[in-house]
Image 1 (cartoon, rainbow, N blue to C red):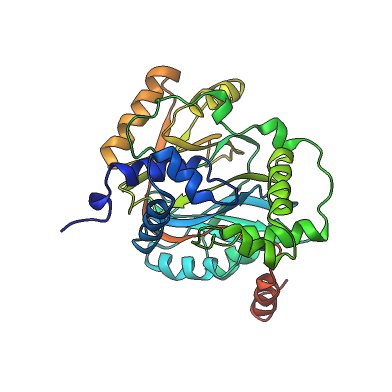
Image 2 (image 1 turned 90 degrees about the vertical axis):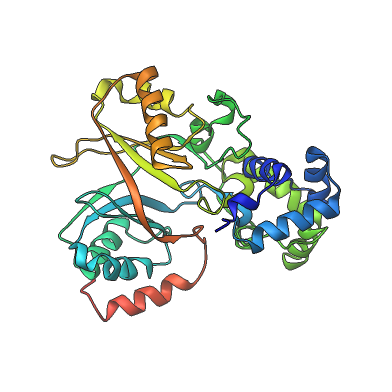
Length: 350
């Protein structure tokens, strides 16, 4: 049986690798991307359309920084009766701010991320989800320090094994003081977080929706990226359809005084897409989290071994996802949360 990944040719792989880094925000983005790849605008557009239809490209949109927009977010881990894991995951997924939800090979078997808008209590939302899911235990694991965020899968095999510091997300810019968002900013965010229309001049459609010119939209996007509200405009892939069939959340038991140095080094590994410092608990002594992606389980283990060879052999767990329940982009400033609150208000004590 031929998989989607096996149908990708060298141009597809180069296109996907490039589009994950930075998709052009320009009048004719497919022309610019095509020039980088040595193909015509029309061929580039046709390839992107096919890769969307085949489920390799999940979404092509702006990627915003949750915290910069005033939202609170956290990773949470639940210990749920394995017989009820699917049922519990379905309940968790109903919250619009839950963007990722996986079953993993650990007594804490459900792992999800949830974001809430300004004014909502993150602690209260997690407590409600714990109750609705009938979890035995839930630990809340917010980001204490972000060393890296951004999935950029190398389908070509030609990228350097270590990323430069410039390629890794700038935490100082992320945390720098920012002007408050205006109503126009929020309008643009609502538009640019959607999937890009697959047209020769797709941004013209969005500019019309915003009652703005393309130049105004482009200038806004550049300003948002400079301020750290927007991380980048890029393609997000379905990992499995792109040939990356395995992913592991590797949690490391690193001494407190070594966490930052280890995190900064681990973040440079290209196969590491996310690297965070998180709180520890008596039953969870792992402050450092890394996500690695590879074509196979054994390839993930090879990455972990390379990290150990360079940085040191710390006690760690390799938590593989055994089922994906949800993976979407967080939608900001949308009304779906009102309906969720109305629904849970009749089911739990708020």
